[in-house]
Image 1 (cartoon, rainbow, N blue to C red):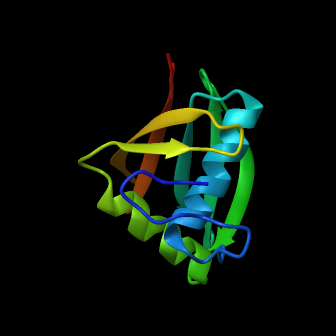
Image 2 (image 1 turned 90 degrees about the vertical axis):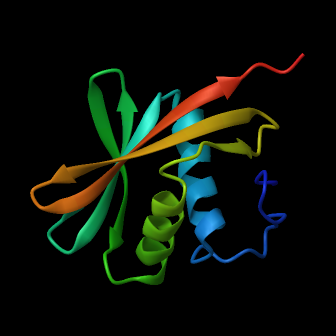
Length: 119
């Protein structure tokens, strides 16, 4: 799997790899038919929810100090001012837009997923 501007992802890629954890979560969200993700801190964990219009469903819970959560926060924070294009397992391209917001004094992330129609 390929991330535009990044390196090739393979089956051997670590989930702690920033691109790998984001790719896994976005792939899961697209397979569920969602329009985005929200990542917020709650009780020592980064809670990841898939967004269906105005409804959210939890799809992951990562220990805040764990490698996966740290990697995910780093990649999201680094892309908050520029969009990112991913090619996921279904060979579908999606454009991600990352925004940050304050959630009870913590930085939270909202990732909008937009499918790219290929000619």
